[in-house]
Length: 333
Length: 171
Image (cartoon, rainbow over all chains, first blue to last red; front, side, top):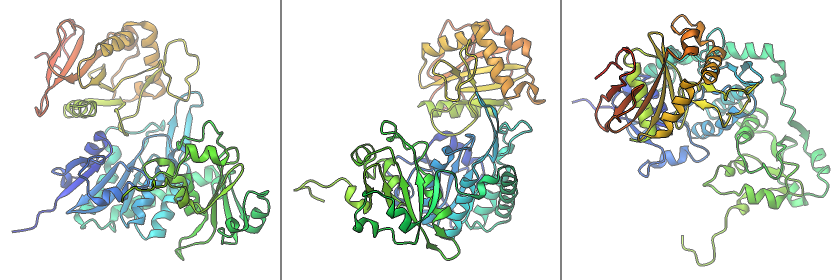
């Protein structure tokens, strides 16, 4: 008697769960389980520890795929919010899929065709390559007017991949994955041709000589703090939030991971080559820690996950662990 | 059943009968694109969701008719009022037409919608989807009523409505 494969699909929202199930007949009997349910296995808790992805696929008790789906026009910083979810998948060696339009029509006051933020695409590729996992970015197709196709045909390539992936024992080395990567490459070239600015960091990101950077900190940091920036170069990413608006993680949260993987790491050597400083120049330390505590149950904890330092209006924060909520005296483990 | 489930079940109920989805706004997550119908009189559509605009939970079309669907776990009178406002006032119908045009939906070969029918309201159908039994008195509405664990809903088509395509034919 053969061993029957059992799939479970952990979902953030039911519509996406049903949609994901429709990608392959192999998943027709899979149970849909809310990610927020009390009975999820430990690996789900791990995979959602940075942020919650749309789909986690389990096969016979093991996670095999994390998927994120977005139909939002993927321009500007907004889509970068979702990157943290894929980082956690890659860190755990899980195949990642990010289903997103590479170009789409933006409606409203500034209506027009918008391209995907190429740094989103490039960083996802780097994340996959750095951790040696597959990170696929299949395009959500659009029509001649750049409106998202939603008649069912939009998922054909992704469905093809899912069929092959599942048939291949959840190994992503399948022809459809190569097809997806070719499309990603084509679209990347197209976007770069239309917007050459993407070949450089955005204006909010500077790559500086570390000594020069530290010498201009105007007394914000002691020598001990300065010593924490060990690499000769430092990537300084500025988030120009006001004190009253700095509590929001949207739309900035996630961008730090993009800059980390694009500018601070050598993917081939698999090593970190630059320091990463997140600069929030208009917010002082007390306000920042009040509105963005290092609380693992909140998204604000993402600010502390990949940076080496946070430069605020009046201080340089390092050694972030000390900013986690302290247990009261007498509290038991 | 919660609102997510009503949304999903209603959507697939119509898809299984070859209806064409045009838009949707699930309680959570990414699904169909949202069709935002601006409040009449607004000159420029803002980038952010307008608090006074109307976004239907599901928008489908079939046989030249546009179905504007509101989903809730239970029947809510506010959905009746919302759909009456949208369909019952010329200026709102003009806004609806504008929203459809912005998405080039009237130009698609697969979608048989006519500008005249939308402006007059003659091709607009108001639909309520919820868990429970159909309510009386909603003679110009379609009610798609779900019972948990039953595969098919009860469909009640108001007496004032003309013959509609399957599966929304009269019970």
